[in-house]
Length: 133
Image 1 (cartoon, rainbow, N blue to C red):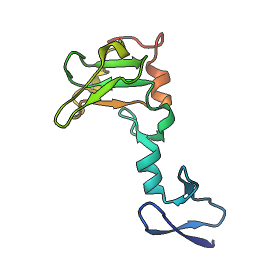
Image 2: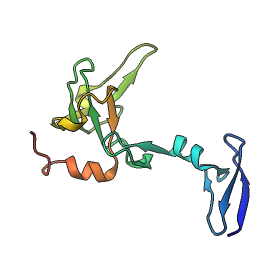
Image 3: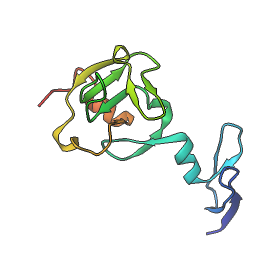
């Protein structure tokens, strides 16, 4: 199979793709590599660890530990902005979140304060399908 060489305009690395594969492009239609596409345009689901498009990232959030006045749970994001950040602290605007359930036991103590869900996991946990343990 023939490979085609490309130059990533973000990280300035050279990379190859198999014949017929198209490279990713950034918002300015410049060619970018898989790693840069993942870094700038995708996020990792905190439950299934799949990478998915950022366009659906801000529908739901999972809070794993107390963050100011927001307790652990799965939340629907109903308003934006829904979080704030300062140099040494961050938190959520509680009026922008609606708690819809508990964090499933298998995901408790995951090691970071919060994360987002891919569309597949959002479908699994959004009301009315979600049941608390």
